[in-house]
Image 1 (cartoon, helix red, strand yellow):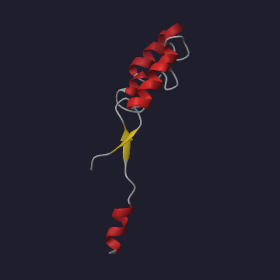
Image 2 (spheres, helix red, strand yellow):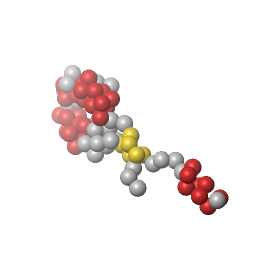
Image 3 (spheres, one colour):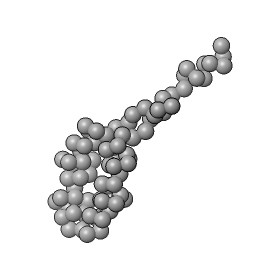
Image 4 (spheres, one colour):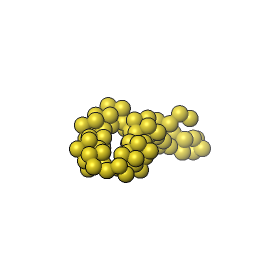
Length: 78
């Protein structure tokens, strides 16, 4: 019986959803990702603090909506 206790109490492992800021697509829009990083290098309105760029952060209207609808964590398939 004690052999199975660890299996039943094991915490579920999770991974970020695709559009989460840490997911495979969402992370591309961060300042370290391919899209967000390029925009940040261009600067001006496209930088992470610029008029356009700030809309794509997790606090911005576009990034925030994507994060709340399609972001978060999901259980890993075992």
